[in-house]
Structure formats: structure tokens, C-alpha cells
Length: 67
Image (cartoon, rainbow, N blue to C red; front, side, top):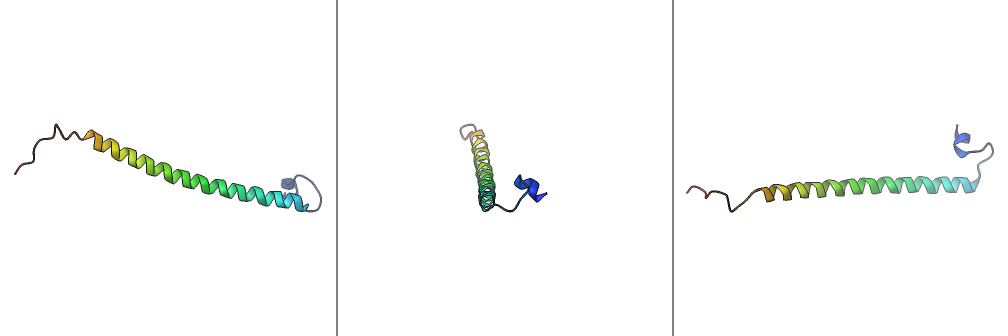
């Protein structure tokens, strides 16, 4: 199976191993970026939701508080 993943039947080529390590690191970097972007998106969504709630409250039409 490992030989099939490398794409040939033979010994380990150092260039292929280096390329595989580089690609694995790139995948890890992209996965980290996805997590960061998802967290940023959630924060922006929460802020937008809060802004919509605050805009829906119209202070000019609110009744005065009872004293």
C-alpha cells in the first residue's frame, strides 16, 4: 500500500520523501488556516447578530420607565 501511495515500486527516493514532507506540512498549514478562519467567521457572525438585535430596539418608540 505504501508503495502504491508513492506511485512506484522501488526504494525510497529522497526527493519524493522531501516532497511528501513538504506537502504534509502544507496540509497542516491549510488545516490551521481553516480553523482560524472558522473562528473568525463565528466571531463576525456573533457580532453581526448582536448589531441586528441592537438595531431592532428603537429607543424613540420605547415607553418611559415607570418611576
